[in-house]
Amino acid sequence: MLQYLRDIAKHLLIKGQSCLTITMKSNSNKNLTKLPWWVELLFVQIGLPDSWLSKYLKQKKETYNFINENKKNIFYFTLLIAGIFYIYPIVSYTSSSSSCIDRTTRYLKSRRINNNETAMDLNSLAVGYCHGGSLPE
Image 1 (cartoon, helix red, strand yellow):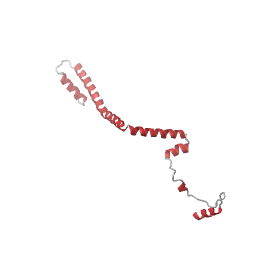
Image 2: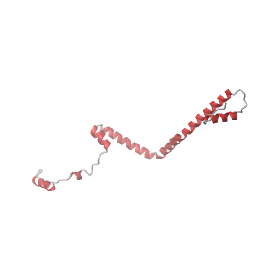
Image 3: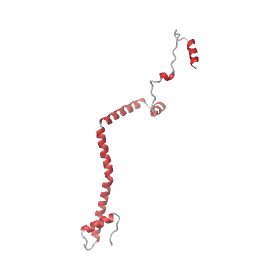
Image 4: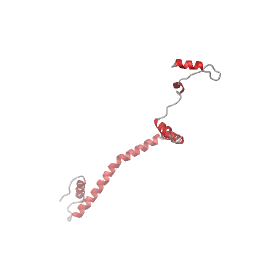
């Protein structure tokens, strides 16, 4: 193939020049970078406007800079949110258990005609009932 190209170069005269320089395609494309697949798909194949790509790239750069400047604040905020997510089920369980105990205590007080049992006994019966026990007859 290289010999064929040399023969063509010998026979061609381009604007009075007797020497022809042939460059290989791989050498000329070294400075070009390959586009990411999503850019190729959206902006080359589908044909979305180029202004959207420039806006996206600008926003991506601004976001990267914002994250780099506020790493400490983002870390503390993430830690706070994780703490809230961790504690929320405990608070929810405690709240529902407390309301169950209050309702059961009120029920036991209204059902008892003679108040032989103290409030502490009624509370312990209510706690036992709310945690899976049964009420006494």
